[in-house]
Length: 187
Ligand SMILES: [Zn+2]
Image 1 (spheres, rainbow, N blue to C red):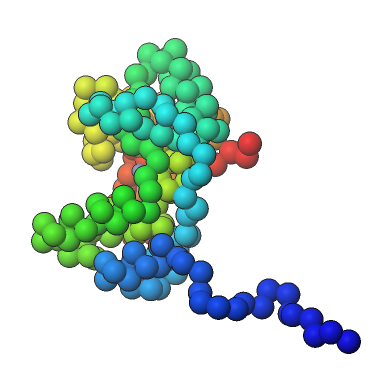
Image 2: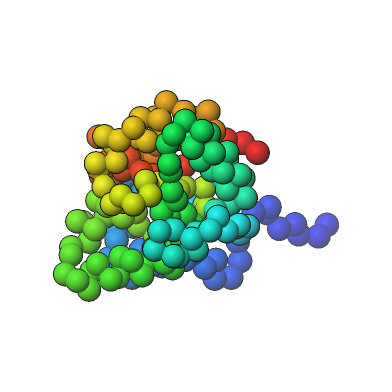
């Protein structure tokens, strides 16, 4: 009787793991995800452009998140709320670059990880997270929480499949991010 290989048996060298390798290279502890209660996020493979942000950089989202964002922004506009996309998809490599630049400017890794997720753990990798601002206003500040636009999102974003990921006092050790919304609806 021929020998059968156990299903799931692994052979050869371990599969490449960009998130693990990037974290190790930046001095991020290997138990980071576990300690923070953060999941590894899958990098999006299908992306669609939603146009430039106020700085002129092209923003991309996963197609279903892009469609939901368009619906939500139009509905907000209909209620007199002008919303603008500041940031969308970000690769694991880009996340590493951001952290490397902060390290180079002298910030400690613990400090950096309060405002930036470790490579592999950012919802922006999935193409479903979007940072939202108001045209002409300073973006990505806690002050966004005091605007009518945020209050509109707070009441209505759920209806479009978006959820605030990092509320005040979130258990992930990440600062309050009233601007960061992630699309969770099934497609
Ligand atoms: Zn964000």
